[in-house]
Length: 319
Image (cartoon, rainbow, N blue to C red; front, side, top):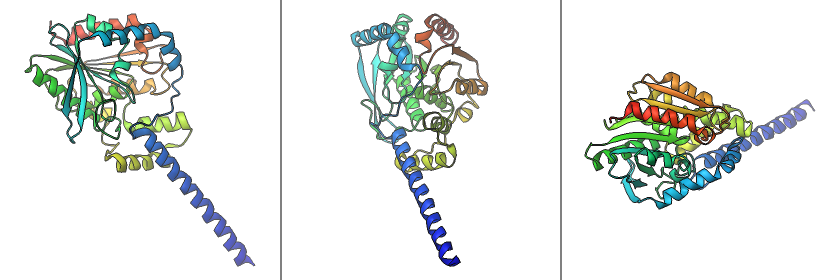
């Protein structure tokens, strides 16, 4: 009898363990696909994001209308791994000051920079508005949260340098994942024509943001899920999410950086920009915007953000 009871308990225990493992595998596969596969939509719970966008629809629509009216040139380059990457170059009266605009996760440069676009044009900047890999007209099946994207940004900066034969002043400007991407690019061999970086609402590392989202969006523990998810993403995309971080990229950074972050950001916490700011050894500025959700600092407090941008441009660009 005791042996029978033991066998029953053992069978039940084995079933429970198998069920737990099966559920973990399903969660890992689903989450990894949501995060990195092209075309999937990550659940959006940004805390005030959609309300802020709706409240500023007029300004955003004005930016869209301006973009649609501008002279534009479709350009492509070849990424380090052979992918064709697409961008739109917007000239501005022969200007040799260029903002390389890097959009966020599952977004576009037209969408992310619509509100600030009139200001950038007014300031005399030409623009290079890129489609990150696995977005828009760029090739690629997987988003890698900055792991491969920062190399693409370096390739785009090199393209601009060649286009202007070195006679150009480039500023890297990214929002959300784009902000993380341009910060990671600070650790790369960028052309000397790159004069500064604007990082709006970026995360410190792919692993940091995934751990945060597991907790904030799904109420799931980072361990043991995060290592399993990272391994799954590596199998899918070939990208090691541990290979990039703001801490590593900024160690030897020489470029001035303007960090911007909304204090009410529930998607990428403001503490991540604060941490990157502390890590940055070069000339730096941190602007946090009270009441601003993710990527909406300019919409919520346009005068303060414009003043910070004006100061930054005046400091890093030659007259």
